Image 1 (cartoon, rainbow, N blue to C red):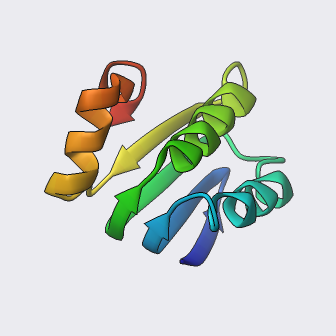
Image 2: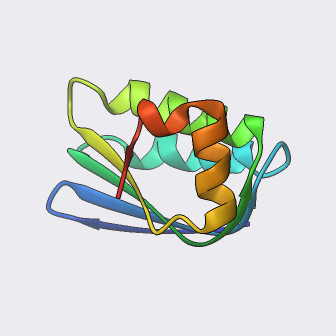
Length: 98
């Protein structure tokens, strides 16, 4: 997985490429620990994300909990497979998907 971040005026966009799974989730979690300070809006761009496992979902849930109260989190550009995973697991009802 490749992680690209861009921070502008309190908005941090995290673009993921590849698979967010058991192997790559810890890398994302570590990166989020570095960038969440000063972030009011966290946007995940999933244009190039192919798959999310339960470990990836836990990382996303953790990010949402960390930013709550200080800002918002949004998931954007989900492909059919990733969107289906969000719907089947119920994450589509607890996360903002655009």
